Amino acid sequence: MMVRKKKFDPSSKRLEDLKRKGQILRSRDLNSGLIIMVGVITLSVMSDYFQVQFRHNFTDSFSSIATIFRAKGPISSRSPGN
Image (tube, rainbow, N blue to C red):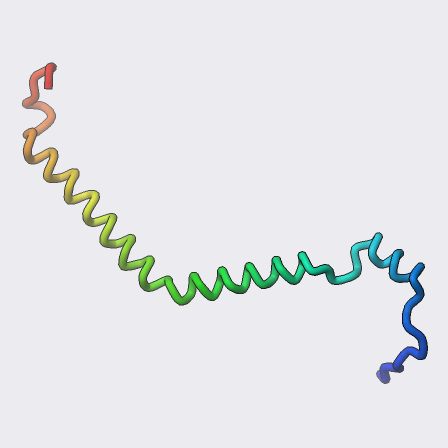
């Protein structure tokens, strides 16, 4: 299929109709696309760092919980005031 080049630019009425229908690329569409691309690239570059930090925080949190329970003793042996 051959694409023919149009001889004339679209009229102002045609452009207004397309704008009303939302069929013209706007700068906010471009901005949204760029923001999504930057976000995806940032997450892919930083994913190893996030994984290491999450693992460190997870391990740190649960080891401190275990330390607290070891210091206070088992729950069944505590008096009601503890």
